[in-house]
Image (cartoon, rainbow, N blue to C red):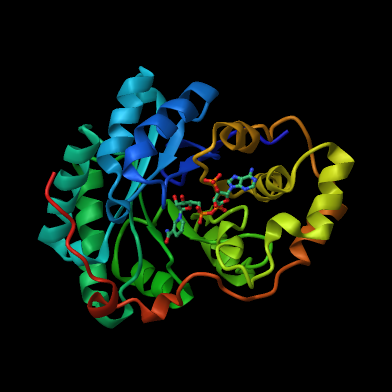
Length: 293
Ligand code: NDP
């Protein structure tokens, strides 16, 4: 049985399954986080750019869970890249969350057109790690060329690379590269939420192979997908605002997919990305002000 804990490359333990809160509106975030923690979630993934860090912090306090028992992961937005800017981004984020220390602080995107700023931002994360203000650091949406350059020009190997990863878009080569450097691959849109946002697109929730595997185990499509990630060693951060789905998405530790079932899901990869191509992310197109705490 896969346990709900992954040990990062610096020895820090991270609950493998967390709650994502992208597109969770600020006015319901406190309630959702409180409900999730009561259901047993112990890992929340937010970001400065989601504009709900304050409400995440409030939800954790409302749940009455000890700070040490919740793993808080958040992300620096590209507008705050640069050494001093990213150090200040930590103050903004920690202030909004109402905590002194973050468990995992990651760069939200590479900025290919301003990679020196990306590197300076990462060096600020290294400084925050050395100062004990964060327990682990990492990246998100880093493609092989970004990782290669980061590894060549900085000191601390990222603990995590959070990337789009669901049955229809699996990025096998990037996963191999992460593994070779002992970087945990963390799946965003792990149940393929992004495949269901456009009506024209084929949704992972309706996939006949996944549904049939679920039928064999008495589990839903979402549960099968989450179990597939966990058995392949990935961290997952499914998002829901609905209590029944929060519970469903956590209820994945009492069954085991067979090797053949895992291979059947591996075979569903289409190679088609749902999110933006990481190379089109520029300050001009995606920059936005992140408010002070
Ligand atoms: P998910 O794969 O988590 O899917 C979420 C969608 O599926 C929502 O529409 C949700 O609706 C619905 N859903 C949730 N549970 C179930 C279920 N059991 N059955 C059917 N439908 C369900 O996709 P996301 O894109 O939200 O990604 C998850 C997290 O990943 C984000 O919250 C964020 O933390 C992170 N992320 C990071 C990105 C990055 O660039 N680093 C980019 C995108 C996401 P409802 O809420 O109504 O239940």
